[in-house]
Image (cartoon, rainbow, N blue to C red; front, side, top):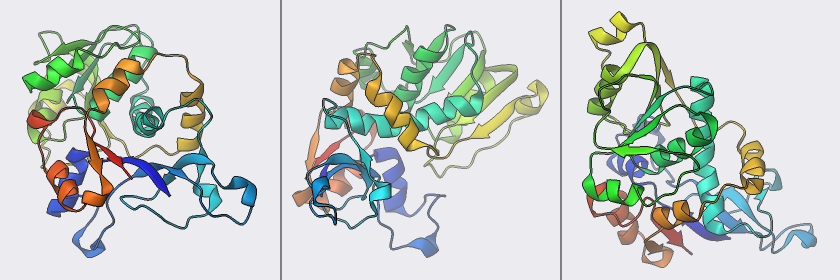
Length: 277
């Protein structure tokens, strides 16, 4: 049974509109949603009943799944930290694709939840400069409340100096153009778990600079990453506080779901609407 879930507005907006490149028209009807914090309410092995963990149910309150798809959450880990760990695994995957070195300067475009978690994981990985660019003033104010493990510069523009690696977490054609402009010659651009549907165009600068391009998919070893995430010592209190500032009741679906899935960042109270079951 699901205890807590979340709505990822950027990705789920494209699912509602039928424009997600990951889910073609022939795949509809489509069950939206991602991984959830769940509890086992029925099992062949009765000793498992009551165990809390992570599983992929989507926006559903109950589902029958194999136990191999259940990842146990240790005692002392909150539901909110577990939910963020699911998405942080995608951020870590992007950093691995980019093969970020310990002294690289990195730029992140887009201050949504994936952009923030990419900045968080980068601040643990590199001693180089990390800049997170977000266009919306209210969102920038929210991001400045987060106490990252190391310095992360929050800004409305990339600045004058080019970066070795740029992570595009904005999923817009304009952001992709900015990434090409802001990345130094021989550098890399990584499109992070793209749920957008806008067309990306490789500019003349991309070829003139000899840039590299990568695109990530969801983490391939979620269990391995979560086992690390659950035992890490970085203080994530301010991250949780910025992420979850609005609850959505599952018994108010589908109207409440559509309201949040279609909303833009300007009116959002936090980074990620939490779904309470």
